[in-house]
Amino acid sequence: MRILLIWVLNAVALLGVAYLMPSIEVTSFGSAMLAALVIGLLNTLVRPVLVLLTLPVTLLTLGLFYFVLNGLLFWWAGHMLDGFEVHGFVSAVLGAILYSVIAWALSALVPGKKG
Image (spheres, rainbow, N blue to C red):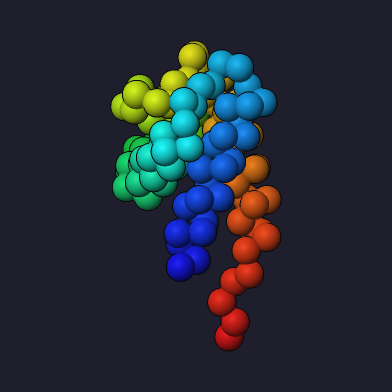
């Protein structure tokens, strides 16, 4: 039940990002739900491989390359889905940062497991 609530909150965070940034478009709540699912799957399955492959660049940039990776995955999700569009790489990086902050704040409102 908690995972479904987090998923819905991530979709709400994505709608918030689309509201705050005109270069990111989400057509409906259903599209936001699907985009939140795809972003979550990309972050779970693809991101660890990319982090490992780009470790030298990440070390050279003192960790700032993580923002680029998050932006690339956010941009990729925008290209994969019809109801979710990201216009430009800079918008993707800024949108990914904003999405992370909003999703984190909303997730902090959900009580965790006790014990």
